[in-house]
Image (cartoon, rainbow, N blue to C red; front, side, top):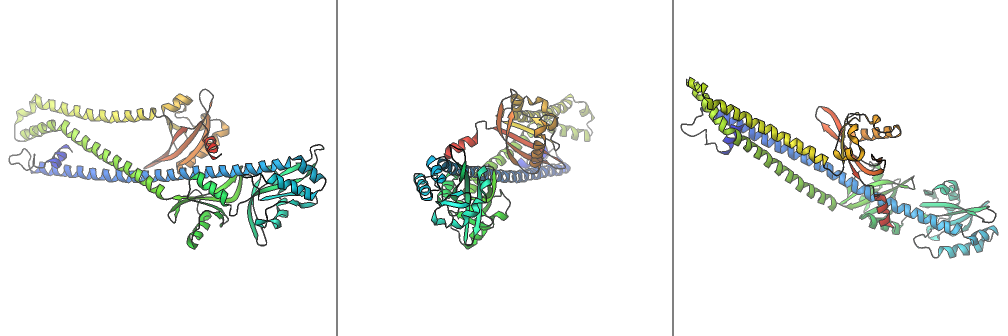
Length: 495
């Protein structure tokens, strides 16, 4: 391999000079070794390039999914805030003594006048749907906005009174030509003196073409497009697509949830909406410009080129170092071999030749030492990371933890132990299920764990498969501490 390197650098040094020490056989051997070295470098470069491309593509996909997940979290926080504002508006009305007094007297006009006065100062707490239901009178005092033509749906809303009392719901109701999707809640109206329940107050907002709510979500999530989608119908949208793209968006729910796909130059993703932990049939589609993807690609292309260039420089430097260390010894050994082949038996007993073998052995030891240093540098790098890193096998047995986990969680005792020996039984099944999911594809989790002092710490844990050719995959993981609640920060930003 060293001789081949010399041939690549200057073929005339040994092989083609008159009176050279090499014969034709040596020339052929040098040429073959040089060719082998050249092919090895090319194969290494191609393999490194393919690995860099694959790794960069996975990283870009992961960053896109993370960015969209954060945007959807913000959107859900806005919807939950809207839910809270509806409840605050209804509480202000239901707890008003004048309302209860007018209802107890069955004073319909008086009740409507009071409701009108209470509604007038509301801004962000505006209620599109508002009516009172009394025993025997499903819709008694109706203050619903006539713009939505929702009167025919009000008796049907009263049938959900019990479900709406608990936590509110997103309902889609159809009757005749009226088709509305609403975020609704209800509260009992109680007479303070007697504690008697006089009736039920219903209120909420209509989500159909609710452009003010969509625009708020669009600004807070820094998105280009926001769409409310339900069962293939576009309920509301900030986007005015043509017929072709309109059909694409309507078919969005047929795609796997969480998948990022491209529509008309936009990167889009949909997610089912869950308000106050209550799942609904409503989905939110968020779209951003594909310039974000272009920026990510450029960033990772630059990193990949730098990595490829650095690796090639290191490989070439290593080859020349090996040549520099071993060439003098190999030159003398070849001369010694030729002298022996020409009958110079005394050359067998030359002490200088014996020392050349020792020098060659020392050069080999240096190369092995370099590899050991590289391994030590990797271990030092992992142990100095300001975050947790671990590796498990396919049976959830811990194979490696870095110094951070040892310092924070006293994790030295985790090594070579199954998860059931480390974690409490109530969380063992969940953690094992998360490990199995992480062996299939990368996942992101938010976990709370007690450190060695018994204090809770919040971590964002990313688990991912480490695939090995011909062997079972390992589970890699990194844990970043986010003990300052990110959700609190995001909520404060929205408010």
